[in-house]
Length: 154
Image (cartoon, rainbow, N blue to C red):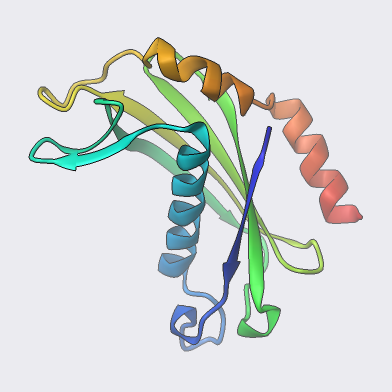
């Protein structure tokens, strides 16, 4: 199941070229990733060990971003659709597709999240408690590509 998150375009998001700056676009992806994690139902804790989810840390090990169309202030908002593409032993891959109000795809992104032990900083298996929730948001690559293509041509 994909999660949709709407983000308003603010003047502060723009660069001198008049479109959303790439650093701000990464912040849009972060906001959508946090919304997806919240949807998964993890209990988020911040203490001396850092920010953990049910006692397990997470880091981004890889992030790929393809910019397909500029995001302008006149668009007003974008919608970020997020889902899981792959679930491994200690990592999972989140896909984000950012669309403009006219359904044009502006950004496609993949982020590989790795679960970590907050004490050692080393990777650790995905907790079984999480796995069912993660699997509910899993959409295989072929299905996701067909959906994104259909959305872009609608």
